[in-house]
Image 1 (tube, rainbow, N blue to C red):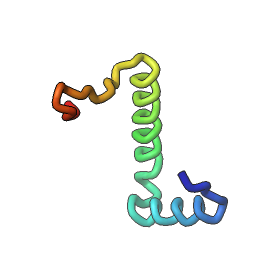
Image 2 (cartoon, rainbow, N blue to C red):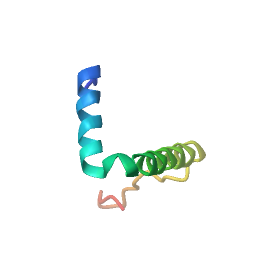
Image 3 (tube, rainbow, N blue to C red):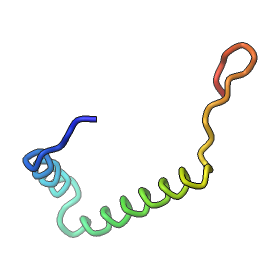
Length: 60
């Protein structure tokens, strides 16, 4: 995963503001935070299952 410097983060922030607008930014941030929390909870509890290979080597 590439490292993001301060300039890259500023560019990403400007693009996000241009797409969603200043008014929607808190809503988008809240939804993103909730998604990250749920993903971390699911991975720590083992809810997400790893693909299983059948006898012929196909993943299900």
